[in-house]
Image 1 (cartoon, helix red, strand yellow):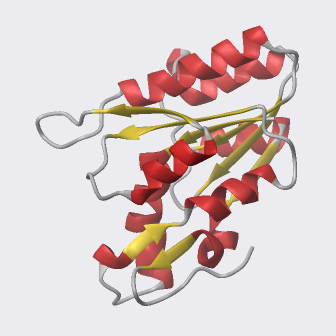
Image 2 (cartoon, rainbow, N blue to C red; image 1 turned 135 degrees about the horizontal axis):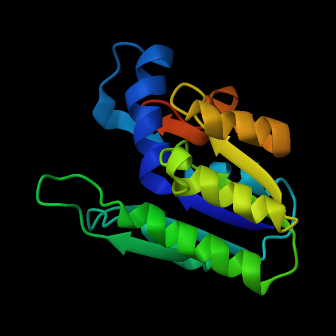
Image 3 (tube, rainbow, N blue to C red; image 1 turned 90 degrees about the horizontal axis):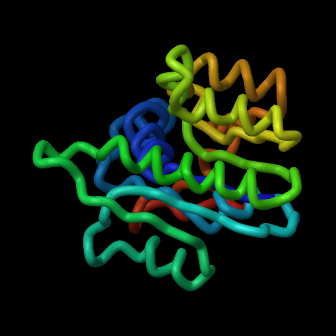
Length: 185
């Protein structure tokens, strides 16, 4: 299996849409995504042939990226725009890696952690590319916050593969710094 993770989409969708509903009144600066359990949730005891993560360049104190290095995960870090927004090239980096893996390896399972399905009607974006990769014989799994997942991406995953709503695992894949520890998977 191969894992592709859109870090910003997963983290910020959880922070902005799920965290306020499940932990109302808590300071948003405490919210953290717990990568180890998120990775293990997706891996589910299976052998991982490759894992790819893309996101914006983190603060120097961000331990997540050091942890990814330790696991040998291929990561792409990009600068944010002048206005502080993440560049579209984050998605394109993941999509390029997805196609390289799909074309260079026999069909297996491709797990995508995102919620971004925009551009599908134009033949672009994660949804359009997953459709192409599915036609090559790959099994598709999408892990996303249901509250923010593109409805067409979710429908495709449910019909053609597996859709895993991350809300079911919220307390196992997130924690609040110095306040709430992560629950076991």
